Image (cartoon, rainbow, N blue to C red; front, side, top):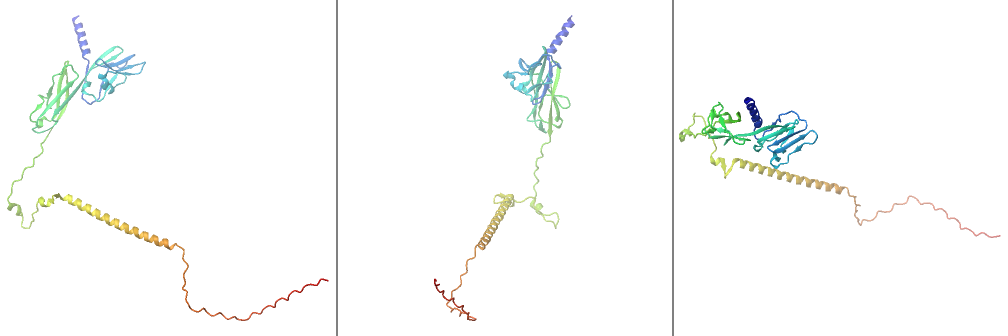
Length: 313
């Protein structure tokens, strides 16, 4: 009898604890109700607030509580029973309850954030601190870090070494179950500092390695690199700009001359189309030419005799 009571107590404790789902901020998570189908109504709650209600005989409903308005807008019921939450936030963590035809199924969503300060990309010899925060439980659990080789660590790096590079695990426990979240640490070689060159005597610098060689300076002197306070590329830009201006002026002058030439040609053609004016001949005082003598006298026809009046008998 005691065994049966104890077994019932364990089942009740497991039912109260529910299924634990782990996720990271910004990811998408799917919560399974615990049943694959329902007959009348299915509801999802976050704590005591209704999120979604689905009925066989009616339209789906959404919760209107202000505390769950944000997560309700980012969640939906898929495949009739599953709850999908997009772009998970730390405040989304907590207890979720799925009720299908009076059957109650509890789930706990844990949102775990892992990060390193100042960054997870470290330089050799630099310091860093690893952080692990678990959201969704009434009491924050104790967490422990494990190195890439599996050995425990406090999470505080005083001087990063090459062996610190790899995947670190944040480990914590809840109701006898162990959970972990990973963080990748990179350790890079420090940038090589420029070593100052050893001073050399003036004789060593000016003296060539061979008698027929000519020495060249590795860099320009300040007087050559900077002319009147400007770099060489500034003067190159100024010269190119002046050349462009001169070419533009030459183009404008040639264009103007060509337009004037066309205008003159057009005027000449226009003047050539006007009607010709009568020529004005000079009037001189020279004597007129003599009349041309007649070739012969023309015979005159005799005139008709005058008509006599008729006598009336």
